[in-house]
Length: 75
Image (cartoon, rainbow, N blue to C red; front, side, top):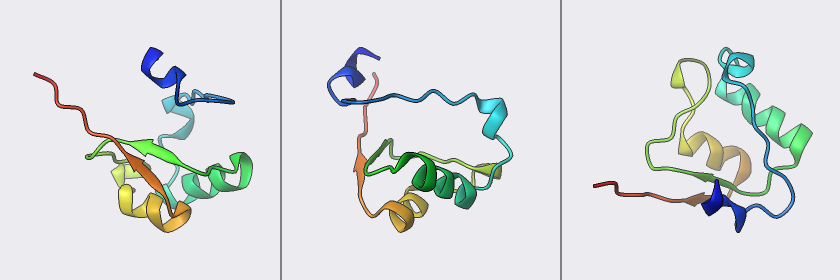
């Protein structure tokens, strides 16, 4: 979490997996947009979300237009 400290200026939201594991990727994007006013999203290269891992970077780009992409190589 320390590496996020400089990125997060106002709020960090923790969502329990059990609360959201059946939500479609589309509904999750709508939730983020309508309730949180998301402006940027930071994800890794193989990021998947939503029921059955149906959402990906392209889904986020469609809804939010700008994605900050990070990839860490772990040795």
